[in-house]
Image 1 (cartoon, one colour):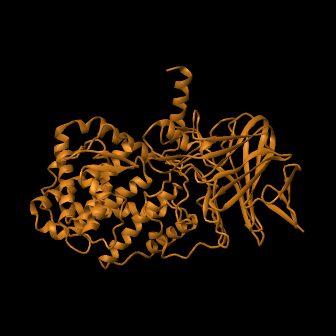
Image 2 (cartoon, rainbow, N blue to C red):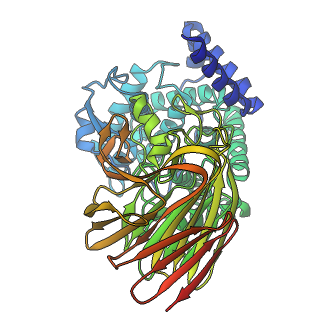
Length: 625
């Protein structure tokens, strides 16, 4: 390794480590002792095996609702499993450690989420086939996956598997009573896994991983009786309640800032309430209140199609249907909704079914931002209910590192790239060294103007101490403006990127105009006209491989080519640029003037005109007829 490369990597380790909490250091050392030393000894593994016999006292936990999963039971019965949109034949008996698959695919295999769908086959009436399939899969896993086996016995898969087996135990309780040999073996394995989980809690990762550990301890402490179970229940409850108060913003958003993980964690607390109510136990008032706030947050960020925005490692269909968690909260309000604590701002026009959401927050908590993307000041937009401008999403965590890097990169988002650099120094799959911070956020709403203003510090490390500031405006319930100001000094190459949904077609190729560029797009019967100013050139990408650009991954394992426009300019900072988005093909003229760190934009239509002044902390609008 060259000295420069070694220095860079050591620097990345040092900066990343600086942000970790002390408990993460302690548990990382502990995990290394376990995985590199103790897990290699048979005597250590046997200690866990001797913890349970299967004859421990237990009480079946009742689940009033089991969320279905996207599982093809007929294929699973034949040994074929589909995760991350990839189907693999694992044979019968199942190969629980397929060498050809990624870590995330194997994790999904060991989660046993598909047991939910198997259990739902039994709901309402006995189903011998459903029980036989669950029995066979669980028996094979117990026989083939010894204590400390990689992937199978990692704490996160243990947590999800225990929860799913517990749901299956509730549904198949009558069958299990009549199948004592298997039920005893199942309970023994569940007990041993819980003992192991308690010793391997993911305090080195914290956040959603530790939360799932806590849910499993809490549930298994309710299922089993005795001293161990009381300790599990208390420890799990403490983790859950600490997370509820410490891992969420005041506006109800989860601090990892991923809508998908927010929904996953929302389900944890919803299930907690469901289980307590089913057992006729009082639900703490603060839990009920916070759960309502979590649901409201989710409802506010959903697109008109009812699904999630794809910021920060978010993918469709992993967390279930958002409607299952938002039917009990008020519908989102018309106009500007400021989720200021979590850094999201939504402008919703219920009459026209338009929607835009802007990311003005950080990459997540500094000690754990592995799901964070370089998406500062990026946005997603739906027009007339159709997604037009999209985040690129995420296709996988553990496949080809090129794709992981791309989907986390600045180029995969609807924001500005300066000098081909990243907003944050992302490295490996989940790590971040130097990272951007949001700065100077302002917003306002009136009858004919809603706007959000924000900056980020990601490019301040570049020569000239560059700062990117953006204004997003919705004018007269008619059109949008994105105005960008590049502060600092010196020569820079900037590119402002727009990623379009794969169903969006180009109806008029972008061409040069006297003020910048102009182009038209359409999806279904909805048109969109984009006019830029302050741009020298426009690049068009579609499914490009080197470098990667123009790829849309709304689900894990699913990737489509899509069109991306990149508005380029060679600037001497400070400099202005931007574009207007109009949902029709009306003739428009633009004129932009720079007035001492305030920009002034004149937009002239056939019958009227709009003049907007972009100040540091406000936008002024004059509408003339």
